[in-house]
Image 1 (tube, rainbow, N blue to C red):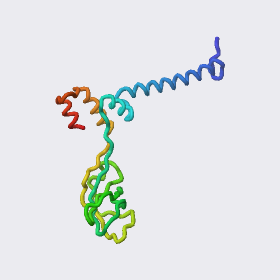
Image 2 (spheres, helix red, strand yellow):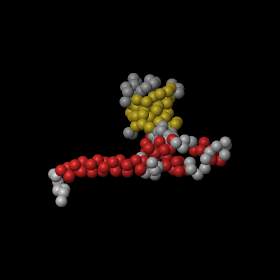
Image 3 (tube, rainbow, N blue to C red):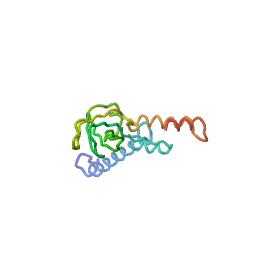
Image 4 (tube, one colour):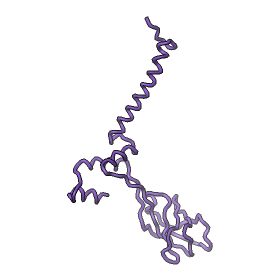
Length: 170
């Protein structure tokens, strides 16, 4: 004999509580997924891995050898394809080391003529002749999850096989 239709006193009082309970269930479900490494998002997987002494690697930058027909100042910028390079070091009169501004392995195989972004007096041609240091991608979620699972196979200590494998894989 209680009126429970929309707009009634009981409905209005309980609908707010039902909404808050639903929010609580959604948050609890998210938290439960984050404690399982297989379903955790990347940031929480990093935290779980840190408890096992496993840390993801950041992406690194590729470095290339740049050859030109004139002297180039340190800090001059060049472009090849979709990647920009900054001159960081002088090797000889017309040879330089340039660092890619984009981290990762994508520019590892690029060589060829570059386009100057920074104006260089007397520059007619410049080209990347070789990649001196390969860039690497950051550790993916799947790679991190594989390392996490492998950490349970055996514990590394005192120079045992597991410690050698851990050090070599690092």
